[in-house]
Structures are given as structure tokens and as C-alpha cells.
Image (tube, rainbow, N blue to C red; front, side):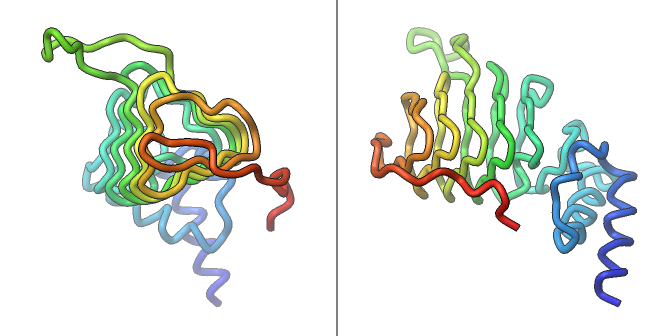
Length: 181
């Protein structure tokens, strides 16, 4: 019975989002996708964003964001600023209260913004709750950003944990398990 209900939510979610934005979710996640889709598409919070985004999350310049196969912004109270571009890899998980800011103010005229390279987040990354990723940062594949960290420089190596303020390398990780079902 429960499995049939989730199949119904999966079917209904297709009315809110393109298949490429929801195909990676497991069956038991479709209730939340449907609920977010209803609030996003029918009520209107984050209506302009093509992928599922929690109603409390702010997304700026979504047209400059490549979301990967898991929707960034599905967690609560995130701020994702894509004005200089953000590229998410596959299987990127983002905790609540995360800020990913691709644009900064000019120090001599706060009404102007600085251009920078896009933020790039590799495959199989996990951004812990309350972390902040700043403009121009590149994170390698399978990078775990500890909760509350401020990432102001790139960590292009793979299989690593980073954390702190400012973020520093903490430890090496083994290869990510691709078959994590």
C-alpha cells in the first residue's frame, strides 16, 4: 500500500519537473518532491527555478546554475547565488542553512559587483549544514565540507574532508562507493 502511494507521488512529480531533475531520487523521497513541487509551482515560492527547491531557500540567477542530478536547494534555508555561475557535479548533497555565493561586492563601491570564475563542486560531494562556499571556489570529487565551514579557496583534490574558518584540509578519504544503495 505504502509503495503504491509513493508511486503515485512519483507520477505526480513529473507534472512539476522535467524527468532529468527527479530521476535520481529514491521512491521514498517522492512525497517530499511532490510537496516541494506543489509549493514551488502552485503556490509560487521559487517558481522560476527549474528543479525542486525548498520554499525557504533563496536561489539567485538560476539560469547560471547547472544543478547536476540532485537538486541543489532542496534543504531548508539555503542561499544559492548563481550570478557568476555554479556547476554542481553528480550526487551532490547540501545540508540546511548552506550558502553558496558566486558573486562579491566591489570593496570601493558596494553597489557594484565583482566578476569571478564560476564555483565548481565535483561529483559525490557533501556540503554540511551551515557551510559557506565563496566565489571562484573549486571542490574536487568526493569532498566533504564540514558543518559551519567557510570555504574561501579551492580544494581541487579528490576524496577529502575539509573544514574550519577558513576551511583547511582535514583528512583523506577512501574512494566513494558508487553502488551505495
